[in-house]
Length: 129
Image 1 (cartoon, rainbow, N blue to C red):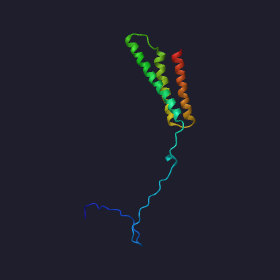
Image 2 (image 1 turned 180 degrees about the vertical axis):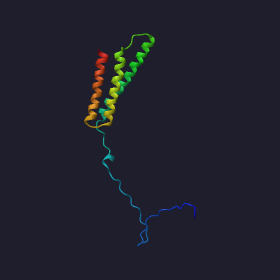
Image 3 (image 1 turned 45 degrees about the horizontal axis):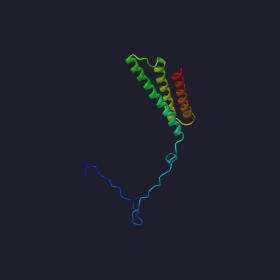
Image 4 (image 1 turned 180 degrees about the horizontal axis):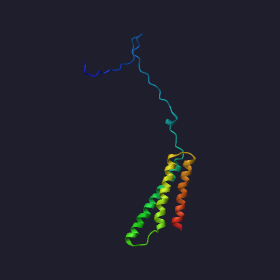
């Protein structure tokens, strides 16, 4: 009819020689290397260094909260080196961890090792001295 949209229905393929309907065949799914389930490599390393980076971030927030509470109450608290050093170390560790999470190979291992180095330096400078 004029003015109405026509709807076309697809019917199964028909073999004109025999007059029988052909059953549609299913294509076998292709197996790609990405679809094969493999255990990701370096998972424990990223988890460990990520925990260290997150721990530094939580520690930095804790030190800042204690610094504010000591300032409000007039009590002696952490010095300026600790109030600045902890957040700086946490930011550096979190940036390195982001690199470790998004890259593979030597770059990821190096960034994860950098997280541990930053944590070690922060621990030795800000807690022992």
